[in-house]
Image (cartoon, rainbow over all chains, first blue to last red):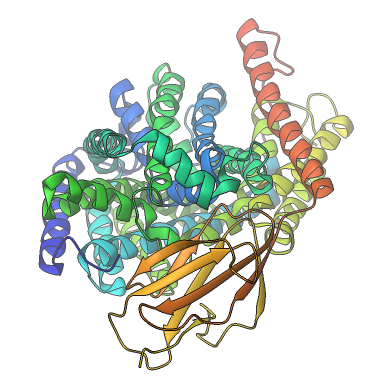
Length: 469
Length: 143
């Protein structure tokens, strides 16, 4: 599909207008951040509705809207379910959040936990892995943003990608976590409404009998009950989701920011609310063939089918605007969270923790600003490549999955052999990368999670009671 | 005279060899006309046999590529032409799947790890609620 439903001018206008709104709101909410604690953790007083909305909106990334459709397109219903299984990561983080609040009531970052439970070596290992993963995640979202603006508005990829990053950087700079959580609330409402409207319109356009016949004739493997790659994707994705949520400071900072009784409820509810979104996004992609949409770039299948359906419903150029607004919200809601959480790690763990620098509240904002901009510049430079979003994302699966069991052990067990856990993390990462490149795309997280689990269980068997040795 | 359309490698736009392999049921095809004219209407056909005795049209339009999914393991044949032109030579695609043995091993590994992860977290949570935690408070790092 080569015809754009939006002119580049309209696309620029929509993004700049939305960006302006987020920046103004960021400035408004940012006034509440009186000190470093306020900037990083929104005063540790986030309630249920804001907490649920921010967790859900952050988990609705550009990947949910653009990679979930790819999985459905390539793996049918299994693919849709595989992506949706990432909801369990949020739900399972609920019991972890209870322990986190209990063990680290004054904690600031996930790094605090790793430093206390795994010592300096474990802490540095965690920092390397999480920074590598966070940049990878950020790159996938920047690429998705650039491709989205290119597909919908004909804006050259590099310009669109830069525009989206700049907007998110500016309002995160001004408002910190207050701005991120506030904008997430509005963005989550827009995302939910948009996905429901587009999903219903696709449903109305499809005749299920014809759709089934079309898939049976042209994509027969999608109807197979045992589709090998899809079955692998199911567990790989689930473990990817566990690893991502359990370790990343995006989620830990939210757990620290929410009130004690609120955190578990908010994470569980956000998982429930998130669950239908990738299913709807995937369903839209499954409709590509039956609706006669030729897919040339799988990364763009979701927006292209949605655009086709809305345009056919008589919405014309408004179709492109609706899709752009919904997807821009999903991208912005995650980029801002990731920028804020990663800069917290850079400031608190690297600047203060590793390099032993003192930080007053006044200096904090300046260092945080430099950190946010630095992370964004690195992501921007890597995103210029325009790599395949799904491949970039899944290549990092092993990194996060190798941290699942160390987090569980650190939160729930008092005795384990620390060296074995750390060996499991390193070997998990290595084996995850090997599996991704040598075996199948959808095996990195699965293999890494298994290796790390074996080592962590051995660590428990060899640990001394009462001490993380 | 109508231009000949040919399949090309999506990575470097060089002509595809007569036989290529793909995996996971996914195939990216790209084509171009020798003369490189724009806005030509292309027709892409798929068949299970080289003779194209039975075939189906997979695409008709001006795009110069497509991304096919849901192809079963085995041999598939494709050919492309511009409307009114001649068919390209058949392009053989061998779709491979991961071996059943490897699949079973990875599948059950995934099932086991996921079940163990969920079980361990729930066990830790309920133990914590009943006050029977393993565990008590984990020790702090004595740095």
